Image (tube, rainbow over all chains, first blue to last red; front, side, top):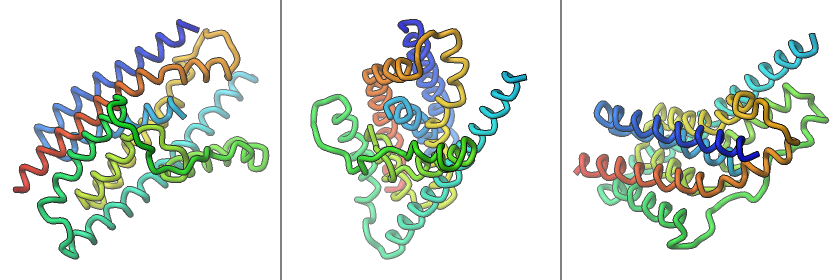
Length: 50
Length: 195
């Protein structure tokens, strides 16, 4: 089961890093659009904690 | 043959779940934005309103770190598991998606959801409201999409897997704090640009 936890944690960190990069790119183009990756992260954590 | 049938059933159910949730999430996002736009039209808020998002995001981030404690406004219910017995796999998957996609209809574990709601209300753009709530739903449905790859070759009952997933609370809280701080920064940038 620790294997599963590692995979889940890795997926979470990957998503967080990807979101950060996407957010940085988006804020330079359209400020409000930079909220989109944060919304995806919020959805991911909500699903995991439900 | 059975495996192929299982894969087809899984794809249909996941698609029904995704579409059902995306539909309700986009409607809720658009409606919230329409409410936000109506508030602006009535001349309420003004420049102070612009700073509501960064302020609230910071407060919610402090809540997730445990520095301050308060209950989130939420309906303390989960979606109806019995639907699968009443309506079958595909229809119940669509109904679960629709129900969870509404956002307000079930439990809200972390403050990020409320930050999104405030962002949609303050920005007041219908298309952006639908897009932002759609992005939230995409993140929520992502775990269902990648579950087969994530849990491949893992031994244990589905209940054990779920329990271990729930044990990731610290990771989720850290991600929430990071997301809320980012939301506060973006909210501040938006507020300052409107001055």
